[in-house]
Length: 449
Image (cartoon, rainbow, N blue to C red):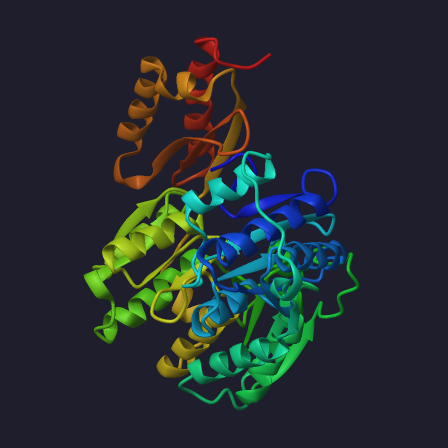
């Protein structure tokens, strides 16, 4: 991670940690880097979510791009995966998405995607940061070389068509609930499900610039749970602000997490001989119950660091075809280069219709283990993590749990915090072993004052 950009872009509170000048500079650098630097006119596509500040950042980015000679193609309010898709298929030099994903409305972010629709490489990100910090000079375009903006809502429509083409089945007479989080999915998800014949029931699809993710969407799934049960729906899907995540709710009102999705679709792929390497890619935060369920059906798995970036890197390296996070960020590498919430919901519908089974039955084999996670503020993350006595305490817990649970101790990527997590058969067991490790961290003097 760089000075400004983390694993999921440059994110912060609008006009505090991330302001319009940052956006202008990012546009200035990208417009030159993909254009005048190599003696061409850059072509860059931009999308945004429904936050009020997204308009400011959209215009600031366009200003910077045009000032450096690039043409900015504006998709307006759309999803992150749609920008990824269009950057890849419509021959753009790169893509930019303005969103802070599941964060509250007052935060925003700038995500950079390469011409393949993948997250931008670290080398280019560091060059952008050098320009923001004044370490690099970029010339202004002049006369006929100044760029322009192009209304590109057609790109969003093309993406909708692509999603519709993904379904192998008609959704006729299936009652589907959609929680659009008052975010980017509001203008896309219903159109897709309606086109496929579903009886579509929608909540939280009335964005006003301030209500994105507010008490709705995948971070507040309880509202969709009630909506599905009250309206006797067959299934419900909840997205986050930029719709790169999807959590589901079965017909009984139970939550279907990203871990459930990995199991359900991984098993479906295996049954059809489509599960390359017989592996599913998870992060270290996937629940132990997922691994037990995969073991039972003979599916292997990889574990990466937390973050869809690392999941995708593994998939590129190994050729594995499905991976993701418990949060609902699922990547189907045959169809997309990033997580896509609406695509994920279509894939879950596909399994339901192919197997002719309700979602509750498909998800039932994944039984979540109780989990306790505690954060410990420390003076030095590496010193605490690498302390021999702390490592011994962790090893002792792992030995005590055996194959009936697990312990994970990891450093926070953004705070001076060590996270201690235990999954086991009971909540009490989790608490006991988490506290056992934390007591050693305290005794060794690693706790911050």
